[in-house]
Image 1 (cartoon, helix red, strand yellow):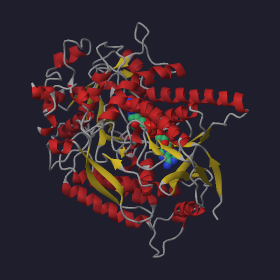
Image 2 (cartoon, protein in one colour):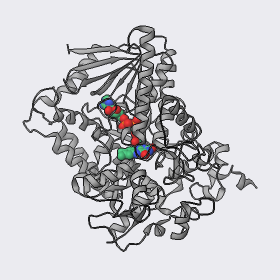
Image 3 (cartoon, protein in one colour):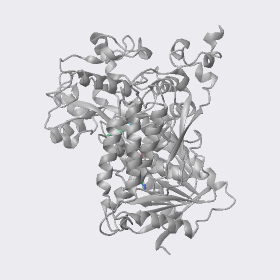
Length: 637
Ligand code: FAD
């Protein structure tokens, strides 16, 4: 029998980023006992890296902003493929979640009259991002950790134990979810430092594990983003949607090679920075797509006036949604008008005084000074697209965050639907708060409604342990594979063949390569012991990256149109017939190590009538089929 440390909780939250911590707070406030498990140190989650801000229509910078405007912007950004109920809840609830953070002790930057300051970002009609310089995610996490400590102090006062209701298990990776029949019964994992196994017996798991960026070579994402939550959910029988939509942020660093992909915040453009090609031309005016014509300035004078007068001018196309800007940069580089290292120029030096740049963008200033020896107050940055965010994720009920597996909930980047085919900047931090809270509530209500708690069978625990230690066993055929080699090959294929611009034959090549790596992963061997062993950790993460990569590639092949974060060179147009069709990924075959996935199309529920009426008919006509618009008042008039 495997030696395993055992714990029992009402709710287990996997992930201590923004979504996970918000879920913990909510479930604990409902009186339940909660474990929060994270792969990295507590406080080091990916959310900490978020720079620009958190989108919420508080109307502090422009009082015309409200939830309906935010909802419309979000749907436009996602090219109307979003789960509209999620987009509605998000737009309605984000302001309350930001104000609530202040009651936990957050300190956002202020306007001159003392309100929370809001900054411009791509695709948002009004300045909408609450921020703390360019370190907003850090403040979010710091504040929620502080709230958790205050709850633990309350628990100590009542129970004499700080960890009576909330306990953190840091540097602990979950490798498998365990079920009792069709319901969640627990989560199995190991401590990264000691390699010791741990089992959490629980009726409810909230997945908040973030994204998948480490499946691509050039990415802004940290080492944690190996698609674990996506793959855990799939293996437990849940469904993923929208996996073909991967966001390539337009501005990652391109030089030097060691830092390629590191993010340059959209806040640079929000605060006045402009994109230029090697002819010193502001090229974004050439790339305003038809669906956004009329909404963006078509000349430099108007674009520049917009920064100070948004009532009478249209916004700069430098702040088009990310998918549009990333494709424009790609086209400029391809046309030979790129910067020396294969990007384009992002110039803030000629737009703001040096002191102002250092004040507004302190992290960017230091990032370029230290990593590239570039002084952004004196010279332009070189930037290019980098894999940044996955719109796709676990299919959930919008109101409760429940997946199709009883007891399994998901929130944050690992869930799908909210952002449709493309996420607007700033909408992730607000998503984490809104749906992290809802996942905590959903899990709490589920647990409270249970008549019988599920039971973890020893057989399932032994199977999970056997799978985890498999990479230590030499393969029967004597052909040994190295996890680092396989990871490099996987990243290269996804980057080159299922990256920012896709075509059928290349995606097929990627799928063939994935099938080959899937076979070779059975032969992966790692040296040494279970005590802190990065090769072993990667061998286990590889399983997850392979599964999510297969989802991305298969869905990308099936969607024969271009929309948001999915651009098909061989199907360059957006196709109204595809707008309402979701591609649903599920586990297909019985390979235990890396199960295969199937992708099945499914119709999405039509937009509720009152929400449909928030849009002009002329705008909807750019996205919808004729039949879908028959109920719009504009059609009936
Ligand atoms: P995370 O914060 O990534 O947390 C994931 C957690 O899951 C971690 O604690 C990790 O250790 C844990 N975990 C993962 N796998 C396992 C496992 N197997 N077992 C146990 N634990 C596990 N969005 C905005 O809205 N505004 C911005 O300004 C912004 N800036 C960004 C800047 C950068 C550089 C990047 C990369 C992203 C930015 N984003 C921004 C996006 C946003 O930061 C992320 O989408 C968001 O933080 C994801 O939060 P999360 O809670 O879903 O996951």
